[in-house]
View 1 (tube, rainbow, N blue to C red):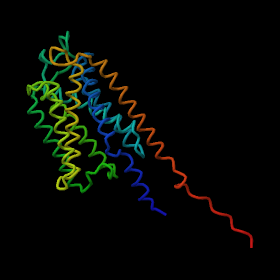
View 2 (cartoon, rainbow, N blue to C red; view 1 turned 90 degrees about the horizontal axis):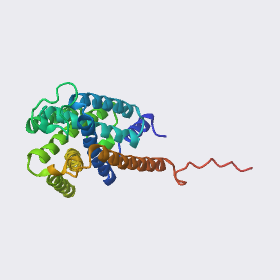
View 3 (tube, rainbow, N blue to C red; view 1 turned 120 degrees about the vertical axis):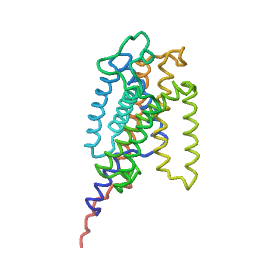
View 4 (cartoon, rainbow, N blue to C red; view 1 turned 180 degrees about the vertical axis):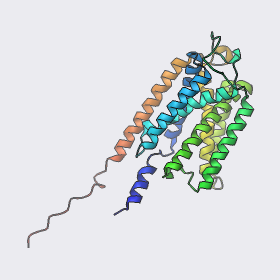
Length: 291
């Protein structure tokens, strides 16, 4: 009979998903929605970066508590936290890098919500701070002796480190995506194409034994955020700025429907996997024959 510790470990490990192609599709959908939804609250609804950051960070905390308190992997819980980190990361990045100048306002807006609307650090300085913070998290993670393999995270402390890295990496990815779209001269389509090329390079490096897959995972996790940021900007920004001008509300609604459908499918797969096959069912004890 397996020990209680072994049983508990298996249960905790199942709280995080397997890294498959479906995982990356959902990650890109969630990060793109995070970009459009963050802009929807901050700019379209004119709540501003300051108020929106506070509100979305509170949403992140609530969803994270639900995820940490769960005893097994639940696609709705997990991907809701990913989405909340993407939304909060969008406005956190904007608040760090931008200021209250009119060039950052949505069409027709003359001002945003209450409070300071940005620290005005700029993309290079903001990215440098976020990279330093992410490296500190990974350093603490390394010194703790816990694994970086997400399917092998078995402790509350390990999961807390994981989600801290997720939040910072999504914020960093937003800064990178905005830099590629706004300041690099590549534009939205060019920025998305560059990040896609880098992700394809990572896929090729998976065949190189000398390159750890864990390292490739975290690089890809960071890079899928600027892909989502540039894709979100491509969907929502005006045609005069190189976008498709679909609007933050319409784009967010479509992306939410896509992500919800993917989460429902993942939940269905989890339920099917939890049902034992006839071969796995424990046979009933046979009745002893008469003497």
